[in-house]
Length: 384
Image (cartoon, rainbow, N blue to C red; front, side):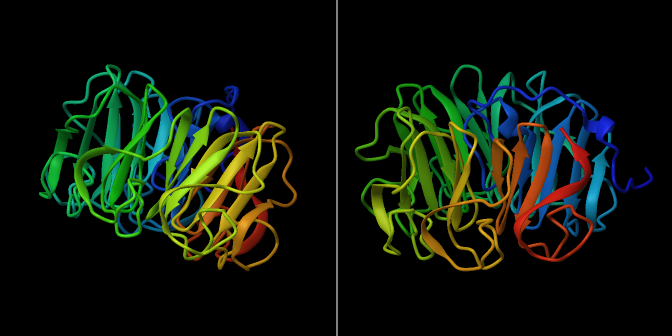
């Protein structure tokens, strides 16, 4: 299919859903449905979904753009032959999509089996993952993927060296496996080598790698089965970075745990914590997303706040200085959703515009260049 440069606004015109629970994979937002699920960022690529289909931009060496070419593109390029998509989840070098009908399609890098086709061969185009009935949420970690079914159970596939599939072993799987002993859940978040679930009772359970305490149980011991996060109740959302995790409280507060080398826990320090700590200076949060080493939130008045690593400008405050406390993203109109990539961040504004900022070495900001941006820049020709 010919590559399309600068898709017209009408190609992806759609009505934005009210901000609520929404999921963006890889470094992902929280829970299913809503505007947040329409944009997702990976290590060096970004994807967006609208009424006209799905478009991706940035790195494509492993097929993560899904356009069948394996060629990088700094402007949106359509992903062909996908049914209507309700949610996107970008891993480091692969992408998954949940359709309106509840199916999951994945494409891109597949060395750990994260595409779910039973092989370890890269997929340049979307592949429907078998054995996943009625999926309501999808999450993509660095090298693994997970799906939440309508009955509250979960399935995961891909790399499993730290137990991030929750299958009770550390053996990789190229096909979905049940997550054992997980209580009925309402959302998933997949990080670098760990996975977390928002349980329907407002608690959070995590499993997999735990080098920096990202499982939140007070230890740094990995777990091959889900374990409850200590002293955490009333959660309505969860987001996972590479080796940190954050939860959104029903009261608009945010708590984080795990690695804090760059201030990504937002408590004003750079000290790791294997237990949840309160994010300072954030109130009225209604949405949450995490990059590799940074975290962002949307507040009830539509402001975007970010904290943590900022070497590429991914905090959007006009600097490249790390921030252990939340700072406002500059120059954004009211925000409906945020999506954290590895070293970049994107937003959907209330008007349906898509903007990105941060590292741009592969064109993941979608502005037609490979120039880093420390303040938001519009994605070329794209509007949701």
